[in-house]
Structures are given as structure tokens and as C-alpha cells.
Image (cartoon, rainbow, N blue to C red; front, side):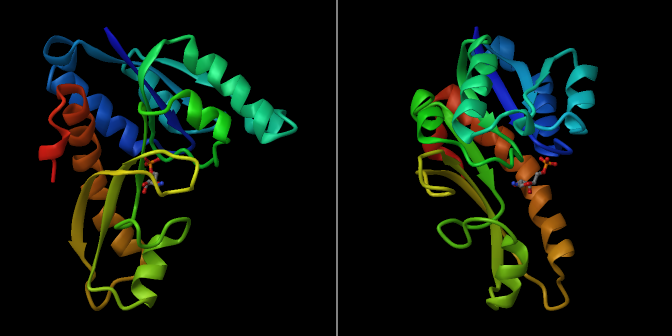
Length: 198
Ligand code: GRF
């Protein structure tokens, strides 16, 4: 069985979309894959309860308990490695990972970022897209490398930026696409058909 470990920091709506897809699309039968665990760096992450309700193992590794990024990442890796992951999925995981962590999961670590990378890496992507006068915005699923929001692009989806958009309305439109794209990209990765995902 290919174990997938999902890392979250907050509401976990992307994680929930992946969990729902795994159930409805029968990833266990079709790909021999399952969501083995959901791990948060924040004890109050809403996504933990959602994962628990689906019978998925959950764990918290509170970053505040660790003096440096390095020791936090080592503790996080121990929890992740307990599930022998084939794939580690960052889904709204709001910590910058150390090169040691990224290297450990090279080729099996993916992230979703709410912009059309390479435009707008980092935070406040929707506000920045509006201020730049972009006519389209979107979302990117990419492999994680040591440079923040820069790994090879696996899949993207595009949405319009409308004249009256605020960061919040644009974020909502993008998030709806995130919930479609991330499960599709992971299913594509599992089926080895990612080059066909658009
Ligand atoms: C998403 O927009 C994700 O792309 C960004 O943070 C948001 C997390 O949402 N990095 P959720 O926790 O998946 O609901």
C-alpha cells in the first residue's frame, strides 16, 4: 500500500478534498494508495477533526515547542516516517521547511500554492495579483525544492480576476479550483499520468 501523509496548519479544506476524492474514487483499489495520516504543526488546526472523522490517524507536532527549524523538522520527519510515506502532501502547511527535510522526501513531496507560479511566490498572492492588474490568477501544484514555492510545476488551474474582486473574493474562486486540482494531481501522480493533468 502506498501511504500518503498530509501536512496541514489550518482549516484543512484541501486535505478534506483529497480525503473525499480518495474515498469516492477508491484510491485504495485503483492505486493501492491510502491517506495514512494527517499531521499539523498547530494543535487547534480545524482539519484535525475532519481527518479524525474519516478514521485517519492524526498527530500534532507544535513548532512552538522547538527552538530551531532544524529540530522541529527532525521531530516532524520522525512522525511522518512512522507511516513510511510514498508521498508527503503539503496542504496549507504554513512552515518553511529546511533543506534537510526537503531532501529527505525528494521526489515525493508536493505543495499547493494559490498563484500561477512562478508569479507571486510567498504570501498575500491574491492581493498582489489584483494590485498587479492581472486579468487571470490561479493555483499551482508543484514539487517541493529548497527554494520556497519554486519546484517543478505538476498542474495548474486558471481563474479570471473580475473588476470588483477583493483578495477575499478572488481567494474563494481560487480555493474552489484548489479543491478540484489537488486531488486530480495526486491521483495523476499515483497513476503515473501526471503529464496529462491540466
Ligand atoms: C490554501 O489557499 C492553500 O493554497 C494556501 O492556504 C490555503 C489553505 O487552505 N497555502 P486549507 O487549509 O486547505 O483550507
